Image (cartoon, rainbow, N blue to C red; front, side, top):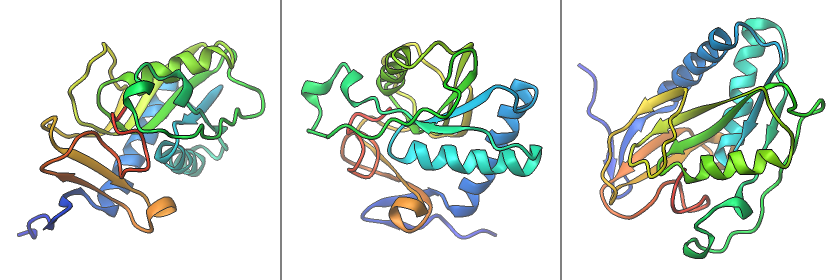
Length: 199
């Protein structure tokens, strides 16, 4: 019998490092299957943790296909429609891979899908970079509570939640370890370093 999830003041663990690894491997295979391989594929991570997730997915695709898929980052800070309601946050780095995104299949990668406003901002930001042939969305966690008609094509875990709960994604690259926790009170998502409203 498996041990119950660890619970602390920061809530309970819903994904540990092994769960995250398995979810990203599955997402990588789904992306390849949907795209019928890695041709014309570009991964754009939404800072902060979406960039780390995009790089990990690219590593898994490379291990399967033997091809290095271009990875970039897409800052959406100035494209959000709720800037006045958000804590001040400086713009992050946008990096477009060589070859750009015109005519490519772009997979946006983020850690948590929540209201959908981050994804809408990402779509607006992409208009300034080029015109992809197809845009898809991959997220580690979908917690529900959409405010816009946006859905993910690839989801690591569907996590039903209350609006008052916090979903905290931690990745080794930024936080020293991998885990996803859900805590009983508070607002928004992330670890406090990302936008409070979630994705």
